[in-house]
Image (cartoon, helix red, strand yellow):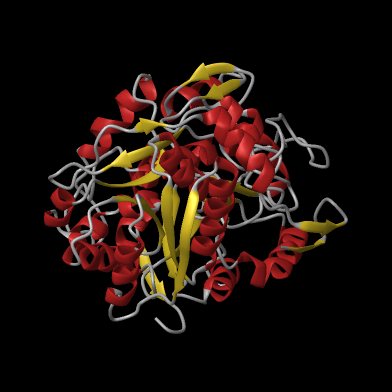
Length: 459
């Protein structure tokens, strides 16, 4: 299996489906049914990942790429859908080259699967809609598409399916955890990155709905040499908790500065804190001096055969990509690891069920293999059932393989605290029903004309 890193330019549950957009559904209107003729090609399928090797998220890049490599090499390619193995190419997007990287993926690499359309999608959406209309390709599974409004995606003409819910949901969960724990006085700290700002906006709105006292919102540029001034400002405000929407380096610098200023409180971060880079930068010493350091996220379902298969396979991997310090790079509870695994497995199952790599066949099949058939938990079992002519209902580590009309997956909201040794502790489950009610009030929908793609949308 070839994995190349090409750096362009400048180097629970079912209710939660409703929380992230329209109600859970089967095949949405306006899409065609899956084809029945399998592809006759025997060439490998190029899977092009929009990767993070430079820029603000560079520290996460190798681990995130390994998250994509793992299900491809360890699971899917043992018996690939339609008999075609998958080959991963990782194209760097930096801070502002996502559109350029996406074009290289489809035009130069001839990618049939484009992984992780994300924060900058607005800047090249027209290009992708034209490409999909002309080529009926590529498929669009996304780990990092939470900044895209929930009513965009999930259609044959715009086949984006997201593994981790919306960024607004993660911001909402931060405020929900604060309210649940009686942390009434809060500060919101966010860097000027679209996804972080979106989550911070949601946290601020949710705080208002929940009756929390927002002492101040602090917006700063990313990658500053120091955040001591901001840490001192927080210390002067004396909050119960700080909701942080920032990268690992900025977050760690802020917490260290606050600890040096004598502050001890609860830090409610973002999902990137689950990556090894955060604790590696922060160290474990500040954990002991603070009341709690953790992040709102979603919890794996560890009581099913899906986890029993995934966890030992993940922990036993020995072929991590270059740049990952240790293999495995972090434990199986990491939501990037298990949600990427589920997303890629369901993508492969939908290809097999559709009998095609065409978006017009795959998009409706993504709904069909996650709802309504016989429950199965692993790729091998599920693909065998599909080949036997059975309808399946894939249940993964993340939970049900159900998606909203806009292609957003169901998750189980939780707060993940760090233990004194820097490892994730037991998830604190959050009130999913209350989260649903808040999200219904604050979620952003794109304004589109006409309603279904191809169309013009603004947000």
